[in-house]
Length: 358
Image 1 (tube, rainbow, N blue to C red):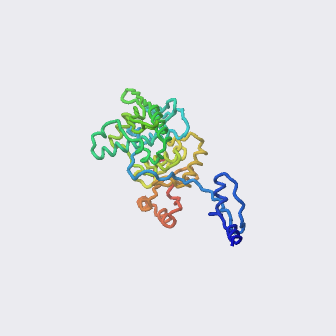
Image 2 (cartoon, rainbow, N blue to C red):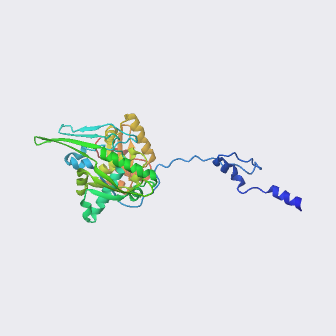
Image 3 (cartoon, rainbow, N blue to C red):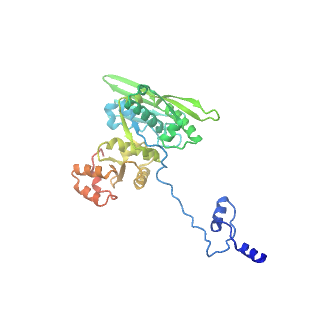
């Protein structure tokens, strides 16, 4: 009896014997030799690709984007998409300048010692502008104040960011760059020349800190008068909540341009070189073309798709099929409608004949 029990005991395998080698490898220890090589096979490792979009963390709410220059130079807003925010993820100490064709208007954007405000720093402005716009829509008196107070946790959750301690420091760095980035305008009109300099935000203040660490809890941000006036005049655009899921600065910038120029139109076309200028990309045209093609293949832009033809013309068009077909039908593009309805995944070449500046 005792010998047979020992035999049975010897035949028993430890729990999860088939995955014992995988678990040990993950722990950094060599696996035990498999007793039955015909039945116990290690799983083939599967390479996981990073999703094109960030995970969805934030709640469902409305967000608004205010165009600072469209208000400051409203009469020339059509040609004034100023790339105030750098696309670089490293400290950008460069200066951006623009001058109108007649020489009567010029704009200069220059950084502080910590660099220009980045495209991701703009999340702070979108959040603050959205809070203020929501207050105006509800008729709240405090929405007429240039200073907005908010909790950091609500900001992080609303803009689809993790809520770990590192994000608190990133927010403080963003506030410093927003405060330090300076915009100077030079406008000649009516025989006078007016120069003015202002920041994106006038000031920021950390109100409270957690008693057991250095993380900020509440923050006050005072908008510059130009940005505040734009919000008060309702010079804002709603943006899709998936904007905060876009990983690359260029994706976010292209969405902003598409959102502004498409508006109620079905599509908008622009030359690749001019698009690079409006986006603020500093690389070569060849490199910019490559990045645009990557974004086209990824289909990550909310609400819009893109095409790039052999003549280097980029066309943005709405994703909504009913709206797209209605717009093409209104523009007497029956062939494009027929092509799209037969194969929605294939972009009709007629889309590249849309309205917009080349």
